[in-house]
Amino acid sequence: EREELLLQELQEKALALEKVETERRERERNYQEAIEKEKEREELLLKELQEKTLALEQVEEERKKREEIERNYQDTIESLNKEKEREELLLKELQEKTLALEQVEEERKKREEIERNYQDTIESLNKEKEREELLLKELQEQAETEKRKREELERNYQDTIESLKEKEREESLLSRELQEKALALEKVE
Image (tube, rainbow, N blue to C red; front, side):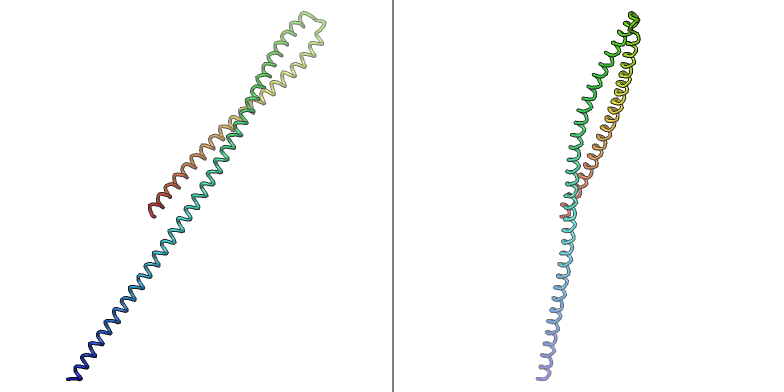
């Protein structure tokens, strides 16, 4: 009977040890699983941080590009304003030359009247007439050249304005995309 009691006691202790060992293994497994989950969470956080950092770098890069575009826009506007002032000066000069042409034409008419009345001055007046006609032709050519230049400048001005408007539209779209990305990042956070 004593041996049976001892045997029973040993069996109970063995069961208790096995239970303790089972619980220890269970704790170790739970602990390992917790470590793995924490590691996964840290990797996800690291990846999210890297993505946000990249997005911030992209936003900063786009901001710099936008500032550069704005500076170029201002420089272009200043250049166009100066070109406009030069065009106005050229126009004024052209108007003065046109007035001079009208005066030359008036003088030519007067000279023709004088030629009719004073035959002795025909040769001299013809030479003067040739000189003034050359001047008239030169002034007309200059006027035509200035007109072509002004038309070309106007076309370039319009092309530049259209280009700048297109850049502003692209920048607006880019800014809206960046804002949407930033909102999405905030939402994810």
